[in-house]
Amino acid sequence: MTLEAKSYLRSLERSQRSRTRTDRPSVFSMYDREWDLLPEVFAPIYSPSTQIAMGFLGLAEGSDAPRWGSLLEMGSGSGLISVSAALAGCAHVVALDINPDAARNTAMNASRHGVADRVDARCSDLFEGLAEGERFDLVFWSSNYVLAPPGFEYANMHDRAYVDAGYHAHRRFLEEAPKWLTPDGVALIHFSTRGDLVALLRGAGDGDRSLRLLADRTVREGELDIEHMLLEVTVSTPRRRDLAFAGSDAAAHA
Ligand SMILES: C[S@@+](CC[C@H](N)C(=O)[O-])C[C@H]1O[C@@H](n2cnc3c(N)ncnc32)[C@H](O)[C@@H]1O
Image (cartoon, rainbow, N blue to C red; front, side, top):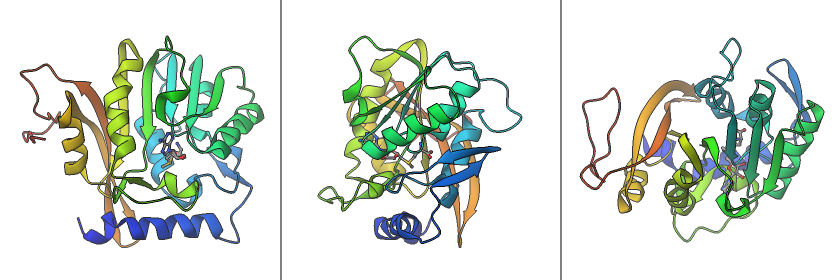
């Protein structure tokens, strides 16, 4: 993978283009529905990642209904994934986003599509907005997987959809996500080769977290082939601190 793909500066340029383009709509169409889009919120129409995440979760057209009764979506953005999950039969969705406009945007789209009673959108830095006893069958984050330097300071909320300074948020997600699961629940993260998997694994390995590859899909993005991955966050036993990848012989040590 080229440095170009992983460059946080290039990623911030993509963020800036998406945020400021003059043809950026306030409503867009996707999956035969109209969706509100607020100005500072991640736009699913300018990146393939939302649709790839929808496919990973079995929410794209022609998929079977999801098996989970409750979903915690981290970083819900416009709310397309959370609202689609509710429309597909998920009875209880909590949608969190650090960007207050994203939380508002998710609530708008839940109302627009008649699932406001099932989608609870909250502004929250990772899990801070949850009450102690809340538990979910699925915790999912289509993350801001591009690594920015640890001291990077965000110029605006939109950039938080693209880069994570020092993987501080990713480390906290890996650490905390399993704690919010029901006994059979799963914690998943949508990552890509624009991110730094070695740095992510190092974060996972600092504690007792492992990552397991459940699915991947390579898409052409401009001049580059980008591999998108659906990773399961698991809690390792003390004897299994290695990072196991299902379907692969390779085991990487953190
Ligand atoms: C790649 S966008 C995905 C948006 C939406 N789920 C979609 O697929 O269209 C990542 C989202 O994570 C949110 N985010 C970033 N850091 C976060 C944090 N610390 N806590 C909660 N949300 C965060 C961003 O604001 C952004 O909405």
